[in-house]
Length: 619
Picture 1: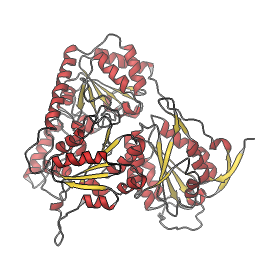
Picture 2: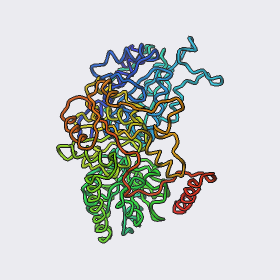
Picture 3: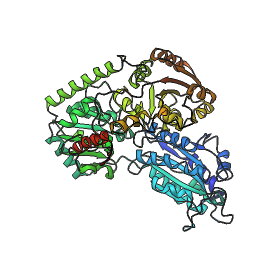
Picture 4: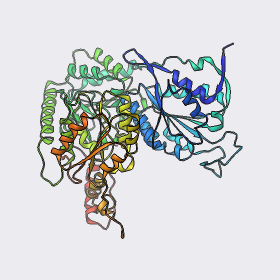
């Protein structure tokens, strides 16, 4: 008979997580769950809180200031760890739990693991309705945690303590399987958290986790080889799956051997060093002229580890009716847009293709053209980031250049974090990184408010990095409280706030769609009797414990950056920037539906342009 120990469900959960180890890519063993972010409430403080306190030496618990913020930080941690390690997040019932929904969707879209542990209503229902309980008139077993079902990869509600023995390993397996990786949720009724049961000893000493590298199917591999050998002008599109597979060396060897240019998605940027002669830069709506030109001329598109979302494909208009090969660990993604699928781990798939392709190469003229376009774009990036542009306020490109140039070692130790607005477009084109993971931009869900919390998660994952958060004033206003958490935890962030006084990215899209200025820029939103906005972001950041300064120009920004890099605590630098100017080079069409009927002539003109553009869209 196996030995058991009488403990509560919450104690069993925490002790299992504290004992769980994962074998890393270098062969070392590390805790799989590096820590727990928690905001306690009546739904989790007595049960889970007691268990976390008892294990705080082996499983750290950190207090945050916002449930969505701490969950965003946990997602960023997993991204910065290439999905090999995670953080858990626990909240009380009610608003604490529903604040997790956006973060769960963010993790789901980006295929990133996070363990969500919200408290839940009483399984016994004896005290119903409890504080913060949602009462549904038709479903007695429903709680707000059911909102998390569609945005998690695995969801379970633990109604009896012994159910944990089945549910927790399933949740963990979901996160460590590359094909199903994403957020998981175990909803924890507050009475069940505190109930004791006879927990088997083996549950408290779990086996070491190891990541599976899925090999390709033989027939799919043979067809992929045939497609590549038939191509003269192949273009490789590098997605985030290359980084999660840690396949950057395999990618470099493959590109160099076969003379194949590499374009990068937002998630895949950094898979190949920016200065590599076959790196043609960003692709798609926020792409470089080099990558997008080659995409239109290619006779085969070889996509690796990418979801092929509309920003990558130009809403399915960027490349012509050419064969597409997709290497992806998830068959759902591999078969999108009529791709020939090669379902496998990115590194394993590339290595097997490399071993089988023999003496084949891309056409020498194609490789030479790719190198020329890449070199021309690299020179143009230098020009764009070193030549001041006319205008009263600096543009994003000038700020990016100042941040990049302030690094003492050519930004090799920098990790830039961003998420939404104009900045991801500018960074995708202009940020130069030679380090996998040095570019950390959440553009799968494009979550405003991710940036500062995401920077904190990235810093927890990579304490050796200079984590630079670049954020617009709109995103800063949506979520900034984890500045205080970074101070509380002693994790330095360098936050650069670009204040263009509104939602400038959507303002420009609104104007390009033919609509008048409306409800985006702060000066356009002053109601009758209201007062124009004049937010002092530096003073606000100082109130949360950061050192902060507002600078007047790029020269002052450069000086402030040098001082910020030398400092030990969280730094915030604010600069006023242009709401109108952005990098015109590159890009491609993106489908934003324009009204078919309007009283506005500008909207009708935009609709005509929209209809012409849709003719190049492939269904």
